[in-house]
Length: 554
Image (cartoon, rainbow, N blue to C red):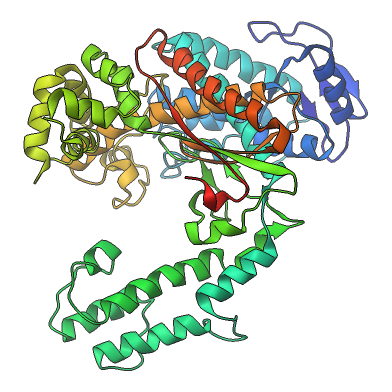
């Protein structure tokens, strides 16, 4: 399916299982209407360049589709699987074919798409003229057929097909959530801001921030200090005889100085004011809805990102403005201990999987192997997944290694591969990006070395990244499959997914549909586990709350 440039019409064509044409090209004057009719008739899988570009317009026309194959997202997955994070030619070639431009012989020097952002660049509009005989529909067929061929050559084609389907379904969900919007009371938001910050000022920060600034300056015996400037605060502590490396909250909490308390409060309130204050509400909330633009797969691990709005980081203090419509409720479902359970499933450690069949994995591990010490069991498991090998983690990790050697070796192997500058994959086949050093050796611009998602400069940091990537990326896949399954389960109801943050999903539904939605959420979690991991003892329980205000969810 391709739309006409600048018009309502477009062209449709049936494709076979191998991506080749299976019927004539059909031109339609009303593309949205034609898609709606075909969707109602036989629910096909739509093949199009980019869900993010095309689906919002269909939603505005009142048309929803059940399934799609997103060529943009799939190309990013396939290129990563082939180790082409630092080789943009395949992406450039596919883009050129869809725009009717010459395929570049070689990538331009030092112009690679940085890892994790290739998705946004595959089919971006070109400023160059298309060839006179260019056929966009033919280009879509060619790219789709090529992707199907390459997909069959992946390490685990069945798993990778599930990844592609889940990634494409996630793009549909993201567009639908942005279209529906999260219920948001602007009047309550204003009330909250006034309670926290005082009334807004025509110029400068609100009253409470001004008061805290005065307290901080008085504590340092100075004037003119700007608390929002980390460099100024570090110098102020140095003049007071206190050496702090930075102004992060966990660092400041260890410091005994009268400026610490007002400074911590200032940092928290300043963050709320700048990220979710009055200006944010004016820009992002309209008609009682907060409508962010979600970016499925926007993080290298497959987790989502957003373009503006901060939907994935709404502070708890502000969530009181998220109130369900009259007669409606929120069903908030949060996957408990997701990453440790994923490790149990993907590592093949039978004893660990048996422990993950319990409702509280940490308590079960504690009872089995840590003399009932739940805190110690948690320290050991988090240390293994995130590479925390010092302090209290050392004896706890020794216990974990002795009692669950297969699970322990799974993450250790991933760390060794990363330290050797190798690539690791998630359960379904998402591939981690190479190290910054590898990108630089290829003559490409790497992201900042301080970016923890890419492992940093040292081999040890790279190992910490890859050891967690295999777990976190698989957890993101489980959550994607949950979303896709839940979306199907909610068809025919008025319920709508309105927020998704890593392993938490929020559904807005009429009060008389709550019971159905809660059951669908639990069943979708179980189904996601079966689709990814087959017959496993590992359970993926959800903490589910039914509330009228998002802040009341447990």
